[in-house]
Image (cartoon, rainbow, N blue to C red; front, side, top):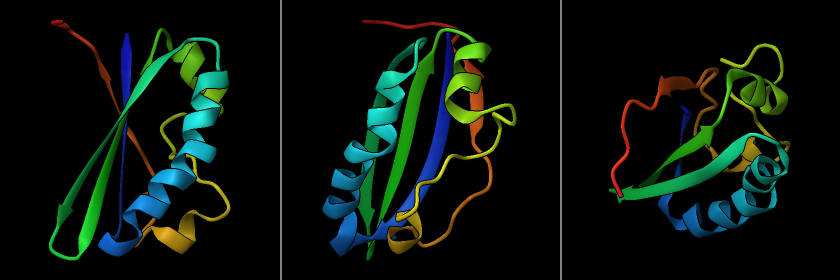
Length: 102
């Protein structure tokens, strides 16, 4: 299993609005891709900013490519992201999941 990590920061007052936007865009698209095993959306409000960390889980590199395209290290953005995010990081991080506990 592979974890794909993406980070973004919005102004704190817009964080709920951005979360709704995530549901309509990226989170919805994750679910459509064969090989997506789920996603965790973490949010932390600190000072005047809301930090988001999305951890999506995938069964293979091919599944990640089906979502992100051939340059799968690049972050995937949607048309209105620039209206919420304070910056658009160009890349994501990937980790092989070494262990899980439930």
